[in-house]
Amino acid sequence: MVPSDARIFVAGHRGLVGSAILRRLSSAGYENILTATRDQLDLRDQAAVNYWFKANRPDYVYLAAGTVGGIMANSTRPAEFLYDNMMIHGTVVHASHQFDVQKLLYLGSSCIYPRHATQPIDEDQLLSGPLEPTNESYALAKIAGIKLCQSYRTQYGSNFISAMPTNLYGPGDNFNLESSHVVPALMRKFHDAKIAREPKVEVWGTGSPMREFLYVDDLADACVFLMDNYSEAQHINVGTGVDLAIAELAETLAEIIYPRAEIVFDRSKPDGMPRKVLDVTKLRELGWSPKHELRDGLQTTYDWFLSQDLADLRTASVA
Ligand code: GFB
Image (tube, rainbow, N blue to C red):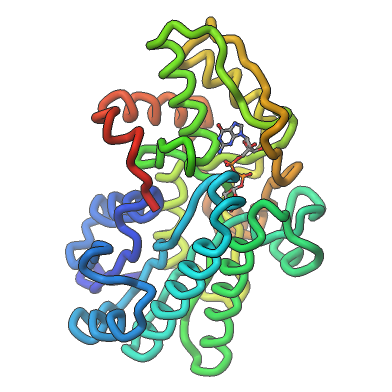
């Protein structure tokens, strides 16, 4: 168990995942939570990261920082996705080793698995085939992060573990249509169409790709659970094990937000991976399972969206 007075660094605390981990740690009573904004610390800069670690001496690290985005951002900004993420993983893992961090949890993504992986995808399928082209750069950086943690474990005995979450959504998400993932994108599109009394809502691709969605507070709960209960070299999947077609997701969001909307598929946009549902047997056997049903999580996220300053949300791009 992580002691209640431990110094815990949440890297990426302003993002969807980091902010949820912060909420979870605060509700569990941890008081020494360390954070740094981008302006305070460029995580791509090893010297700056070393300086920060030397000054702040974290005992535990959640590595949730990175350049992230949906299918379009991944396709059009591959250099940023590869460079930023490789650098951030490298500096934080290396400083954690140099400054004697007791345990680090690294967060990857289900896009690490091959495009034609057998479904549901278990952990052993890593590096068993070619990657999905729309997110190859991000996936390569995330795979390198797993291997980095394993290499520091092998060479130095570091207790660095890796969790691979499925597609995430929830309060604090990025609603900028150029860089967002499908849930916030469609939420905003249905909302804007309702306000404008526009009957048609555009959904990218064919609607047939299958995706699994995990509410971000469930992921944060799993991360805290893994920090307490998991210390193996192999990465571990985090998800619900249940997926649905993008067309069904769109219908569910329409029911919640704008039932009269007419869904139109834009087939000129990419579908991406045909299916990616995780095999979560390993995590379930450890004793963890998610608490939020998809429909309830979507409703809570939409309620949160409505409580925000919508002008800010439309332009902000949260990593
Ligand atoms: O969430 P998303 O961008 O990421 O897209 P991926 C999921 C599916 O939703 C794709 C469709 O088939 C999209 O074509 N979609 C429909 C839309 N309408 C929209 C829309 O308005 N916006 C968006 N964004 N999608 C990402 C990876 O893949 O998954 C990342 O690119 C990361 O690397 C993340 O791993 C979890 O699931 O396709």
